[in-house]
Image (cartoon, rainbow, N blue to C red; front, side, top):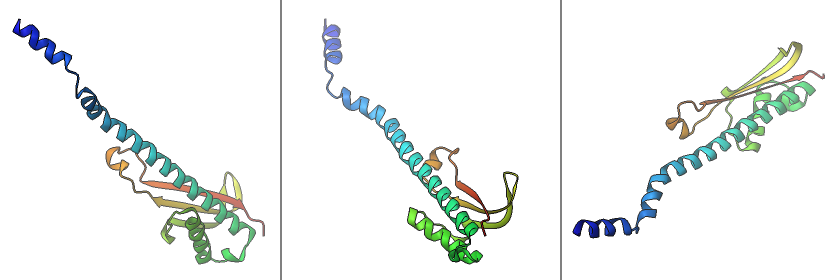
Amino acid sequence: MIVRRLGRAVFADRRGASAVEFALVAPVLFAFIMLLIEGGRMEWTRQAIQEVAVNTARCMAVGKSECASNAQIIQYARSRGRDWGVSLTAATITPSVNQTCNAVAGMRRVDINLPYRTVVALLFPGVPRQLRASACFPAIT
């Protein structure tokens, strides 16, 4: 009789069950949300540096005065990066003249290799630590 009454009291009282369930699910939920946010940020940054590479290669190819020398090309790319909210250093940008891209010679090429820092890389070792972008444009001048 006492065992039956004790069993009913234990299993009938559901107060706090939601808190326990939330405590079990919350870490997975928050990790998933963090992965979504960081994945979106990483893809946005990759797209931004790709746009910077395309714009810089085009600037080199059309012979704009802003892209007359290597230093000016790097400065142009850094300013385009700032427009996108991405901080690029001179070491991350590699402009090249007379390159072969997709079997076409005489192209202007820009490569950007950006170190990417994220907390997610500590949790998941497969997350890239470098974002790369490159673009080629045929010489117009």
